[in-house]
Image (cartoon, rainbow, N blue to C red; front, side):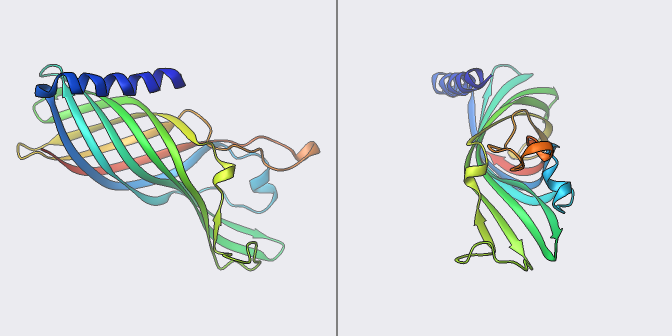
Amino acid sequence: MKKLLVCAVVAVFSIGSLSAQDVRFGVKGGLNLANLGGDFGIYDGYYGVDDPEMKVGFHVGGVAEVKFSEKFAVQPELLFSNQGYKSKYDFAGAKADYKVNLNYINLPIMVKFFPIDGLSIEAGPQVGFLIAAKDELNDYEISIDPEDPDNVDTSDKYKSIDFGMNIGAGYELPSGLFFAARYNIGISKVDDVDDGLTGIFSGSLSRKNRVFQLSAGFMF
């Protein structure tokens, strides 16, 4: 699957460079409503961590539409995307409201079908490259990092590459202004560690990205 997605990225950009007359470029940005789904292990409930909640983030980047006919096109994108989740921690007097920020460079490849002029239905794979991961802690009652107790680098706890699938829809006005909605379903787990426990309390974290995106952009 990993090799297939990487090859697909290379192939789409190669097609675009060979058929420039059928290619348009644009920019987009918008809102992320992000969370993690899957198995959080026994760690969270046992140590007083609430269920994860949706976190507001954003995405921004460029797109290229390679059109093969009036009904079909392929749209590779290069996006910065702020994802993650938020939650609460309360155990033995230590309390915190915190956000887990996972910042990715994402490369979606969307296959677009146009049932009517301007309207597109889209689906396709995505590969993401983690560039930063940090926990933002608020009202924390125990300092866990003397140098910066409210901003903890957790990059070593997450996998550097993420794979997912996207489904969505968009609408483009004759001016080139477009709007889109998309749901990203992670298919590879984001964690690079287990839950840190041993014995009967041990377990594996198997969490995956879940991101709903609302975008606006412009095609040149």
